[in-house]
Length: 69
Image 1 (cartoon, helix red, strand yellow):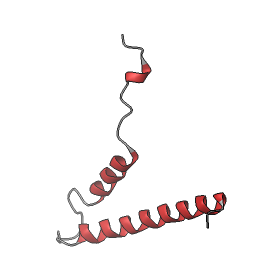
Image 2 (spheres, one colour):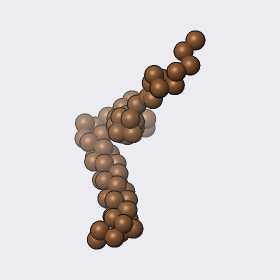
Image 3 (spheres, helix red, strand yellow):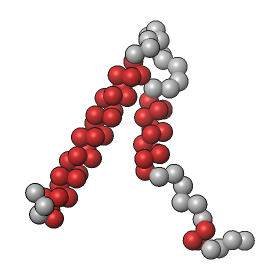
Image 4 (cartoon, rainbow, N blue to C red):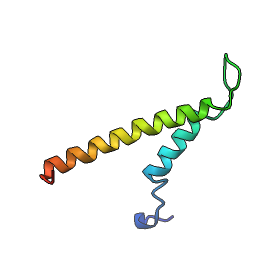
């Protein structure tokens, strides 16, 4: 039995989990509407925009707390 916790795998990084989430939004069958080629791209761009906005707001908040702005 291996009890050395320093050797345990920590799992996927945050960026890998976010990428998996975005890929999952555009995969799989569509239900109730015909399959169109551009819907996944639009959804991915919208999700990426929201994520970038959240990251930007967090960075701005941290910088304002530190007093760098």
